[in-house]
Length: 115
Image 1 (cartoon, rainbow, N blue to C red):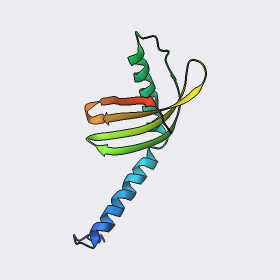
Image 2 (cartoon, rainbow, N blue to C red):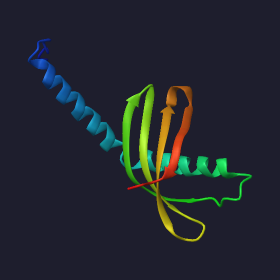
Image 3 (spheres, rainbow, N blue to C red):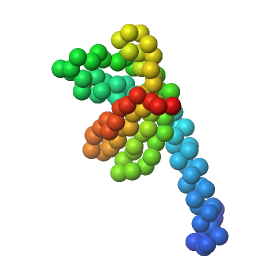
């Protein structure tokens, strides 16, 4: 038997807590596969934007940290380890906006990390 949830001022904090836990669980479920795919996408897009310039392409190593935010779709905040052409490893911050129902994925920013 299901217990109904009644709307009352006392239930609002509980509902917010449940929503927060749901979002955390969602982040944990995608912890392995999706961030790696988004990290590779980010480095690939960055390298595509470099074409025709003198800069050398970066190589994807791994996603160090990933967070997501529900917007019109999902916005992902990634810290990505990359290998520079000289062999050094660096961390970049990337923001990716993903709208799967439109088959749209955009690299919003890709910058060297300050942290």
